[in-house]
Length: 132
Image 1: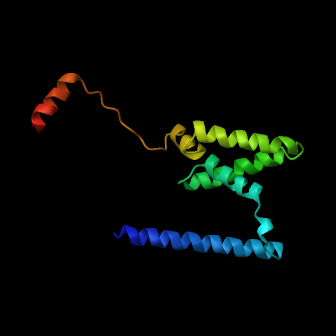
Image 2: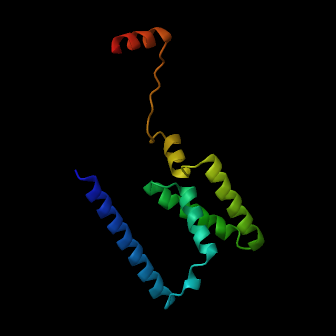
């Protein structure tokens, strides 16, 4: 299995999907200008990715869903929206850096299971002597 080939195909596929999304978005708007993608839109997309979790399919669904629901709930209090989104981004970066999807999977028992093995000092000495 050629890892470089797989990464190249994944990159090309993601670029094709992004291009298709951009084409559909421009058809929806009727035109595309740089002003269509301002700082607020970029920060909103970053928050969606961080909240959901990078590297999981579930995170790419949960993140935007939670952010859009929160945005709609705070529509009336526009002044608080940026503050709450900023606090959410900082909280997730500091306390849940992998996002909410891996956390949910682990809580539901579907995440990676890690076994812990208790090793005492006699076992360590025996292993050290066996390797020398």
